[in-house]
Length: 504
Image (cartoon, rainbow, N blue to C red):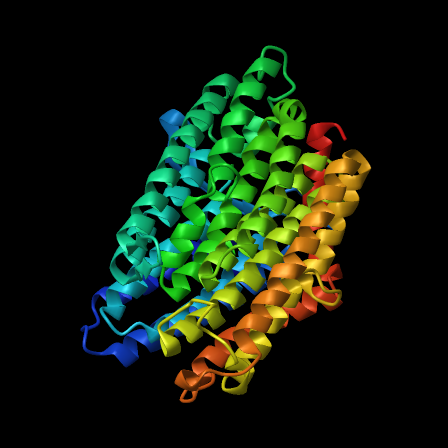
């Protein structure tokens, strides 16, 4: 292993922190320099993420690769231990792609952009740290680091919404988001402490704990059942799990564009990833106990989210409820406990992260030009925003599962896994995909086509910066849809290792 490979994962954490530190010392009036350093840091993160993904040896046999470990608190068995498996590697790549696009779009922020970028980079560092941590203490630490900046990013730079019957202040969305996720964090922290004590290893290291799961007197079925339920609810809440989902659309609507991109693109994926990393890998008997419930909830997510999106008139609320629906496929894939279903769940997290970030990129551009997201007011925008329309339509087609785009491959794998284990619920999942097609096509027709209102005669198309950000997201959407094999090769050994722990 080269020096670069040995340190690539820690660099992914240190680099955004270093960028934030550098920005502290740059005078506020130098906005162009702040933007330049931030975008350059986003590009460096993408390059490092791509390197980590390519360096993962899917034929190497080792479950966790690119490992590094530094003792931190020996008395409690806590170490700064890093590594990635076949499930974490795509999430690292996803974070790099969305982070670059997000830093480019964030250049539209003019008020206190220095503070904005500092908080954004802390959030990004937390996301990377969560995906690559092999120590449960640092897993939780970075998980919290990814959440805390959200309150300020939304509460200070977000936008309030006024509807016919009620108002939604940005502070409401920020507070609701943080309160719900903090409540979930309490459950997760209890689970982590419980696993640490029950394992008897005196270590928070995931691999060390996994070695004790089948030992007599460790991790009883009752313990695993209770802990998995808490894990499912705790991480599921962050992933938009019904009925704890309502914070997510409200958070999307209040958040500035780049925060919405990172929120839906990667933060929600921490929820699905956490269920796999802690719930499935460390509490396999608990998954067997609650798999049917998780499957049912996932199916409700798919249909409820799609029907709710169908009823919305605010562009961000449509996409917010669409995210709730699409994360349901992740739950279904995990609950299937099959290789194809779990592979589909992982690929769905990647595909949805890209497509929803692309959605929010274009919606943000529309809002900055029109100062509204009301689809009852917006119409005929295609004649003025040709590139914006093209990118939005492609994201919509990926969302409804058009062959040739990443969403189709992911949903196909989930459906196959679902029909292998719960065919009735799998059929309902397909129904959810049909409803998705209805609201996406109706949304595109209502917003972009038809006769244009005269008030939109002066609209401009995407700026070069917005075009580049959208292209960064568009490329993997097509690449994975047309040739998913490189991603599937990396995911499969991670899935096989997880299933081996389940005895499947």
